[in-house]
Image 1 (cartoon, rainbow, N blue to C red):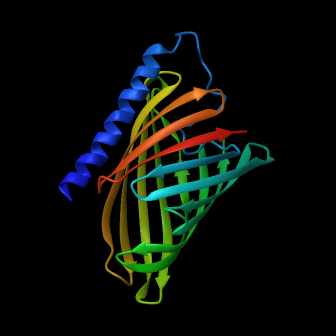
Image 2 (cartoon, rainbow, N blue to C red):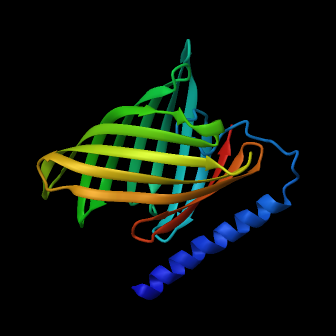
Length: 223
């Protein structure tokens, strides 16, 4: 087990070195950012593929305007070699940097049990000093159920943070806490360390390492 974790950590380290070298070689005048890949509230259509220690992921999003300052995005993800699926819908108000979230997951492996879950909540974009650092607090109320688990109502609190190292390169962290209000005994702290780089206009790559030393990287094409 220790050996496997070392391999995962080395994989993430090599990715960081690769991205760092790419940043160092990038001409100073280059400034793509037609899409902010670091921003979890950015609304745009995309398609992508990912791979890591848990298998292959594929995902796609459709986005558009609802009118006024309102935008929306529908995302479908097939995760871990098609083991489970996520369907996420977001409505975001670019005027006050806040939005609503609806997330649904099917056939998710929770402590050896296959469960489904759905959650509804809110998210806020909070730029800090010189807009280099941005926080994205989110809170959702959800329900989880399955054949061999009590129907559970839970609270999901997340605080993503992003730091723009340059126009193309970003780093961040995404701590998260889940707490059951009713049903199964769920009290879990989760989190990821995140890093990303914009390879070309509308083309990005990012990598993540979670609390269990699981590592994965995504390649995204925005359009």
